[in-house]
Length: 326
Image (cartoon, rainbow, N blue to C red):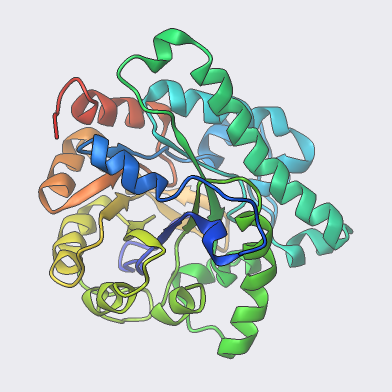
């Protein structure tokens, strides 16, 4: 899904080594994104999952959105992940953005079944990674890709576009109670990272441990507020129009030393009421636009809604290891 053209996104934090916050869990490799950034000048994210699932015949006109495919056609999700790895992505983002206990409960599933579907989303991405990595040619000039478990905002569960508006009628405690159970499942799922996506306000970002976000807060102030949290590996923006990205990055760069990420949408507009896309993609190619994002400080680049493996392939052709050296 995507924001209206006049709305700018909140900071979207990526948390690495998520199991550090759950002492009872098994040990994991520490700081995986940091390790990639130390070895490469740019880490490449994947692109839109729902766009590719729809292109392959999946019906996502449902409050669960791409998570519906976890129930009906999980093999499609694995195939899309594999396509993005082959296009050059260093990170796969799981089909859990709109996967919530509340959403699955409305489909008649109990909490155990819902948690199992969330874990299966991570497993599908990991299986695609292992299939990709098993081919020797795929390992040439590449580092082993990572898997990021997607965690969408409260508004995504509502499935009415309110993740692009914020201003929830919930207390901090209610927001925390909504996020904590899913966070605990995904933090123990084996994912390398947790990707908090399309967070419309600083309040929700902090609960989860242009120039403004969806609630009108200064994006630089948001970046500054997230700076002290050591588990946050990178911050940036997703699912906004490409033309906003450069100015947002420059504003954030003034207020944080953390790596910056950018993965905007194609530039089209999503009509949340009709649940259809309107307008046309940005005229400039995604790879061409990404040069200005790199110049503005972004070192983690990818695409959000309506982007494709071809867009990621173009970014890889520009920033893959054969073109840049640290």
